[in-house]
Image (tube, rainbow, N blue to C red; front, side, top):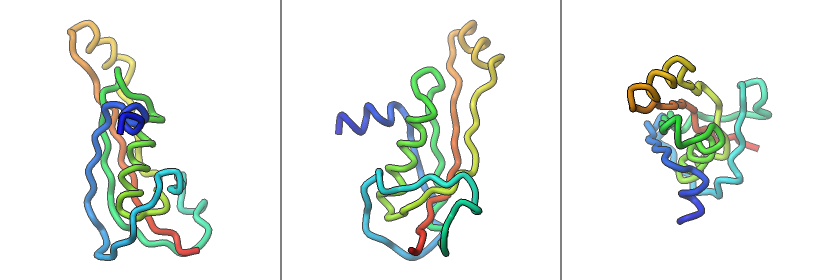
Length: 116
């Protein structure tokens, strides 16, 4: 549990199911990240839309991806189709630091099941 926290940091995820099908949970390392539909070799179905967010000060992109892979694996997805990862602008980070606030890193991915 501690290892999972270290890998995902302070990233929270939630999922909106797109399919009524269920699959057994997988190991997060078995979830492949695809940058475009052209990278997917074979037929696939969309399982869920996964949203992730975390503090830009305390999380990294790799922690965001790790959290999304973990959430997808819990649903039995063996792939993630990259949709969007928004980084706060430099100006927003400077303003947050000056005003004592924080900025948020947000990501949106699609959990998929690739039929092999």
